[in-house]
Length: 248
Image (cartoon, rainbow, N blue to C red; front, side, top):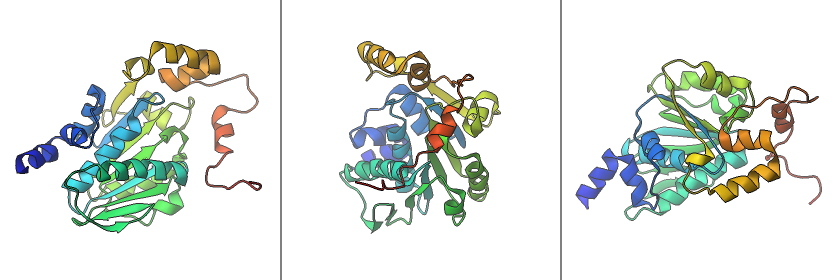
């Protein structure tokens, strides 16, 4: 048992297997990466959220007193990422007890914390000495949030992982992907590279959503529709999962 735990501590990909996830090669690469800045340009249903939740949980377990923030455009999305962390924690055979356990955060007995937050600079400014920030659907997170979180990573030389399906040719995620420097580790995973997505499923999606949006959602292309009155990202930002409908 001790030998197995040492192996899981040294190799996050082995830890993933211990909670029932057999990672793809690219997922193992991300889990094992010690790069401080990581960009994941991934298609829908590629497993990016599962990968990053595993990375968060592994750090929390094996680096005592870590502070890990899970952020995304809405609180609902952040909670979904946190739920993946929690489910993976519950899948452990020898999981340590929690000193805090709720729908938004959990604290381990080693002092590590995992906290889910919306991608709002006003919400995150109260945190300091952050070990890791995982930014889900980063193409939809407002640019000013990026400026707010970077100082939090200085003290601990923390890690920033930005994962997303492309949105359009604008915004901080696109700019870093297109022109970011060598400090960024960049990984692109299209649907054709995902063993869980079949050719038949892809063709069905292509027929359903049209070529342009198919290229964006499944081929990881940054698409801009120049002839539309309202850009796609502006339309998306008009919606919020955190606002309840007026009529049920």
